[in-house]
Image 1 (cartoon, helix red, strand yellow):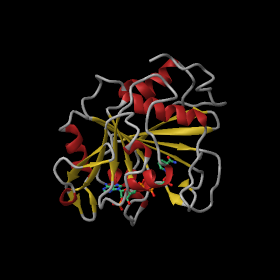
Image 2: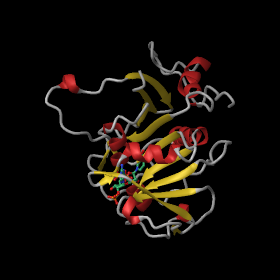
Image 3: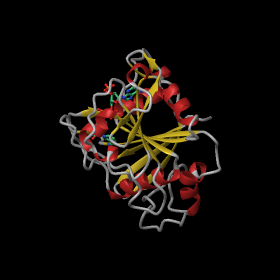
Image 4: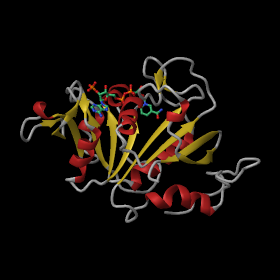
Length: 250
Ligand SMILES: NC(=O)c1ccc[n+]([C@@H]2O[C@H](COP(=O)([O-])OP(=O)(O)OC[C@H]3O[C@@H](n4cnc5c(N)ncnc54)[C@H](OP(=O)(O)O)[C@@H]3O)[C@@H](O)[C@H]2O)c1
């Protein structure tokens, strides 16, 4: 990977220890642990949110919450992982391609979580042939050899009413997809976080207030703030946005 120039990661005024200071060390800290041949199994999620914790407007419009540098960051992340996972809500609202276009690199396998198979076949990623694509659904809804467009339909165990995140990861690992990037939306990332399935969670905060809309992380209620998750965090400045790189892997 080539080193990004200081224009991509400018040093924030008054940067403190733990901040991205624009040095190669800060970039290595963000990307080196994610590079191929580092950990065998790695699950990282990302969300881009407003100051008030929204990832989209109430009608699902989310282009764009964060700035161009965060978009480039997302494409880098896709290029560094075996598979990119999104929930059915993201496909329904965004009709995303989930390919690597803003940076050099190979497209990951695209994985859509749709427990009850509510999505039809017309979405781009089911038809464009740009990368292998899997549609993961409840095991009883997947027939042998079934496809949705060009996507392979794969049955996965459920936990309650949704796909079990661990079963999703085991299903992908059985296909050699051990490095997984969970790209949204909020429900999907929250379920992986609640299940203890994330090694890292990257939240990029943009300086806008949406005021209502789709929430970012939602977890079961807690009684005391002592029960909060307090991951080790490093901050990286992406233009006017700030990426919080949270580590849960010790
Ligand atoms: N700002 C960002 O970073 C960002 C990123 C991505 C998307 N978005 C926006 O976020 C919105 C969508 O987010 P969202 O939170 O509403 O929905 P979402 O996470 O994209 O999708 C949720 C749906 O996916 C399925 N799903 C997710 N996790 C599952 C699991 N573990 N097991 C089974 N099914 C699972 C479920 O579908 P069923 O109920 O059909 O089973 C669930 O209702 C869109 O507006 C999109 O534009 C923003």
